[in-house]
Length: 90
Image (cartoon, rainbow, N blue to C red; front, side):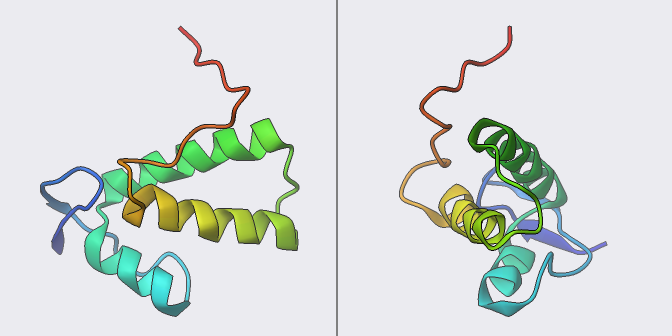
């Protein structure tokens, strides 16, 4: 099993089996994001899709996905900010 030092969780964890998508960002995620970190991002992006009412498969959704992935894993903060209207469920 391949391990990576996950940039999101800050520790050695099992890495993704393959790049989640093509291109430089996909390669960068494969090299430095764990399976657990990737699952966290997918949940985060699912919230983003719902909050912003993005339609899957559109150019707008694809652009948002790539932008959020970059911010979530490699941005200046620890994660991308949730949408302005987001209210967490308790």
